[in-house]
Each structure stands twice: as structure tokens, then as C-alpha cells.
Image 1 (cartoon, rainbow, N blue to C red):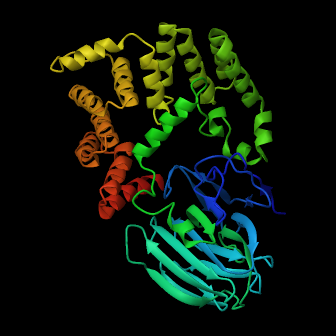
Image 2 (image 1 turned 90 degrees about the vertical axis):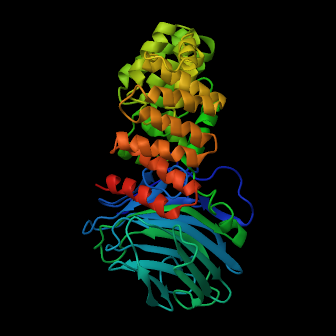
Length: 488
């Protein structure tokens, strides 16, 4: 029997009101959207899964990962809904990356007759067979091209409902010329006037013979071509490191008390536990969430008592980082410098890859009196004795917080002369990239990679730098290098 998981707390969609011409718009990044008959449902069957992924995405922070398992008796599916369209034109856009193209997958637009080759059934159908992408037109699968692994493909469909035909355009990432540019193709069942009200991303539907893993991002459906072109067009389409940094700062500014929640993993929940939650109300009923909110309210009145409450929660929930981070934020309000520095030292390993790391370091730094030592050292940068690492980090991130990019870069370069790893030279690159100079950031990241060849972040940031510079070839080299590590 199929199980439907309503992942209101897991699937992330574009926030805010959509224009009337936009029926569906998911970048899986911002805001919470409830699942249900008017939005989407997740079908997780047997051993396959549908889940958010922050590791491989076309834009922003997250994409959707679909993983099928051959012979498990069923298939995973992301199925989305919108108001039925019986006439006019419909525009369908999405990005897709396939890890193992030799395995089968299916993508479709359909109507009230669901996914059958009849009128008001399947209108548009893409599928892979033996590594080749096909579109099904007039009930006939027709070859398009052989799919390469770990490559994003951008698919755009213009469906003329009245005529029952569609135009199909597919671009390979970084290429201006389309791989596919078809016009006036009969819809899947060759039935004019076939309406649509849903879309589906699945693995192998009928044969149960697929071990496919693929990613979907930037899903948008609208009645105006401008809708599908505007939000995701290069070069501003993709969210780069510098954009993520600015977003993180905005989150911290909006949450001056308790830190912002990035995901339910902050509360120590695993994927299996998250998938059992059916609504945002279910989330708010979780004891850990209720207790955290209560302590956050207490922080406004009694910071020392809130710090104690968070410390107790952290002890009872050792896999929930939000409590330890919140304890630090409460301690900052107490002005207990020694306690703040002790908690910060303990938190550093936990936050090493957390987008909030630099923001919290800046907040800690702005609430201590030690930064003058770093400032004095910077003024006489030839000094052999660098400031303590914790003070140096706080000073650097305070400079970033204030937007003093060039001083931050100079300070990081000076610190790099005293460090064997590439961390500080990478930070110099970060400051230059944030200043709007990706070309100057590039050699810093390259040097950071020479010092630490297996380092993840310099690779990611070099990919971003080349994207910002319009160098699609090098951007792909570094991004695919990153993906290769992630797939092992």
C-alpha cells in the first residue's frame, strides 16, 4: 500500500504571493509550503526516497533528490498539483541532473485522467531508456540525446492545450545553443484539448527495474513565458557563496535573540523522523521545539536563566545543535566574557561547516573587548606573533559583518603567512569575492587548494568564481570535481 508523507516541514518552496500567471514555482529554498491537494505530495515506497539535498543543486541551497531501488516493489515520486488548465498555453520549466543515466526515470505533465495515454491524461512525457532521453509524442517514444552523468539540463516546454501540441527546448548547462529545439509536437496521446493539472517526477513506474538517482530544481509552471524566463536566467540565476553569506547575515539580523533554524536537523531529527511529520502543527507540538521556543521567550526577560535552560536542553538532546548555539546567544546577553569564550571554543568544531559560523563569530567579537589586540597587530602586520586564533577569527568576521572587505582581506592575508593550511588565504578570497572582485578572489582560492588539495570549500568557491566570471568550462570542472567526491 502506498504511503503519502506530507512534508510541510521538509519541502522548501518560494515564499510570498505568486503572480496570477504563475501556477507553480519551487526552488526548494525559502519559506515553508504545506503539502496537500493544492500543492504537492511525496510518495516514498519501499526502499526508494524523495528528499531535499543541499549537496547537489542547480540554484540556491537545495534541490530534490529522487532515488529508486530496483526490485523493491514500488517507486518514489514527487507529484505536484495546480488549477486545471483546459485552454490556452502552459509553460513548464525545470532543471534536472542524473547521476546514473543508464537507469530509467520518468517525468510527466498530466490531467484529471492521471498518468494514462488518453485525453486529459498524460500530455507531456520525458523518459530515459538505456541512457537515452526520449519524449513520448503520439504514443511513440522518440529519441532526443544520450544523457551525461552529473550534468544539469534545463528543460522548457510550451504546451498549446487547444491544439494538443508542444514545443520542447533543452539546454545543457553553460551552453547557449539548445541541444533540443522541437516545434509543434503532438502531445503524448495526440488528443487536442487535453487538459493538465499535475506534474510528476518518478523513477521506473512499471518495470521496477531502476536504481536511478537524479536531482530536480527550479520547477516552475505558468501561463506566461516571461514567468519561466525571469527568475532563473543566467547570470543571476544561481545563488553563489557570496549570496549565501549575505542571506546568512540577513537571517541573523532578523533573529537578534535566538539563532535562525536552518532545518529540523537542528533539533536532532533524522530523515525518518522528519518524514513522519504531517504538518507545521506537528512540528510545533514536538517537545524539543516547544521547550526551545519557551527558552527563547525567557531570553528576552532573563538571559542567565535562558542560558541555563538551553544548557539543560543541550545535555538532554546531545544531537541537537540549536540548543548549544542558543546557549551561546544567551550568554552573550549576560556579558559573561569568560563563559562566552568557553562556549564559543566548544562550538567551533560543531559549526565548522555551518552557514551561521561567521555570523556568530562576528556577534561574539562585537561583544568582547579583545578585538583591539587584532587591530593593533594588523597595524604592524610584520609582527611575528599573530593574535590568538579565536580573537583573529572574531576580528575578521566583524570586519565582514561591517562590510569592510578590503581590511578583512588584508588581515586574512597577514594571518595566512602564519598558517600552514589554506584556511586564512581562503578567507582572504572570501573578502575579495564579497567586495565584488571575483577575479582577485580566484588566486586566493587556488592557493588555498594548493595548500589543502582535498578541501571542499575552496573547490565550491572556485566554481562560483568562474560562474561569476562567465567561464562555463572552468566552472564545470570545479563543480564536477566536487560532485565526484560527493558521489563516492
